[in-house]
Amino acid sequence: MNITPQELKYFADYIESQLGIVYAPENYYQLETRLKNIADFLSLPDANAVYKKAITKGINGTFKQFLLDTSTNNETSFFRDFKVFQIVEEKILPSLQVSFPNSFNYRIWCCAASFGQEPYSLAMLVHEFLEKNPKHPPIEIIATDIAEHALKRCHEGVYSHLEVQRGLSSVRLLKYFTKNDSDHWVLKPEVKNRVKFQTQNLLEPFAGMGIFHLIFCRYVLIYQDNERRKQIIKRLEKCLRPNGYFILGASESALGVSETLLHVAESNVVFYQRN
Amino acid sequence: MIKILSVDDSEAVFAYVKCCFNDDQYFLTHAICGMDALDLLKKDLMGFDIILLDWEMPQMNGPEVLIEMKKLGVTTPIIMVTTRNKENDIKLILESGAAEYIMKPFTADIIQQKILQLIQIET
Image 1 (cartoon, helix red, strand yellow):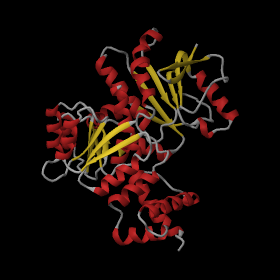
Image 2 (cartoon, chains in turn green, yellow; image 1 turned 90 degrees about the vertical axis):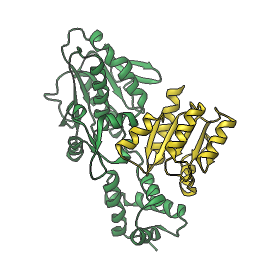
Image 3 (cartoon, chains in turn brown, orange; image 1 turned 30 degrees about the vertical axis):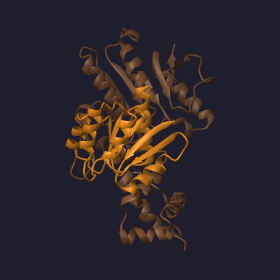
Image 4 (cartoon, one colour; image 1 turned 180 degrees about the horizontal axis):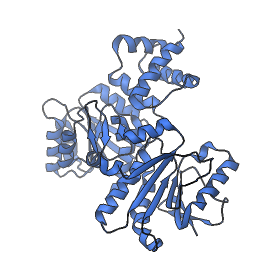
């Protein structure tokens, strides 16, 4: 028996409530494929039988585990590509005062805030760095995103237990989060207050953004065509100080786009530095 | 190859863990209780790269097994995998010498990423 759109919506709503991942109706076919995989795993005949099991017996145990598991492809995480964050922690932050001797405060732009995992990962590193170096000038983090609903979640700083386990060590979980009554984890102010969020479409002028020492622009340009990608990189480069660092996602490249963005490879991580 | 010892009295949980490591990169061994796990480790203290340890088990629970493993001289990173998700539980286990803590339910990418991260830190 075929599963109906209303039945698929039941799972879409459940996944959104658990993971914050939104399945729009036009993507319900993906959900249906995933439910068929779950049917195989649970030895059920089809996706409709999975729905019947859910409404009669509830979604729990291994069933819940498998449903959440198959729904989380491409979800963002804290410290995504943690080697990149190692470079920030071990190389970039300690070198700021040497690379920019005339700066009295340092600025980081995170271009795709998404649900906040990336800017807050940076904020944790900055917090730890400033704890160790209390006389260091301030480091400001600006995080932007085009999506209002994403920024709303950033402002809340509240994450499900699956979200906080994705990329975040248990030591940092305990250090920077407290658990609330609804079993979610709430970011503490010492990290939350380090990030300023604002709306910014990367295709529109960067008016008022200012100049940065480090720009994180990861996993956004993959959604743009080649020409737009080049234009965005060139415009971001103008927001970088000389010697400023520019970091893209693992599958993205600025090679051939600009002569002033120098390609640097360290510990299997590629980043760029403006000359 | 990454050699994992999973200590869990639930066959269903172990079946799920097996699904998470269903490729040639991993070799999984199952111990159904703490005593079995300690016996395996006594035979070969360095036989595993990672130990996954359940909390709720009959006879010896996870924290007790963790203490015994530490007494035995186990230096392999130990990850507690449990439904308990209170801050004090996590604190207790980390202070007892576990390298990481995973709250159930978890997803395959979470457990894989935690293991890979611990192994990279170790090497």
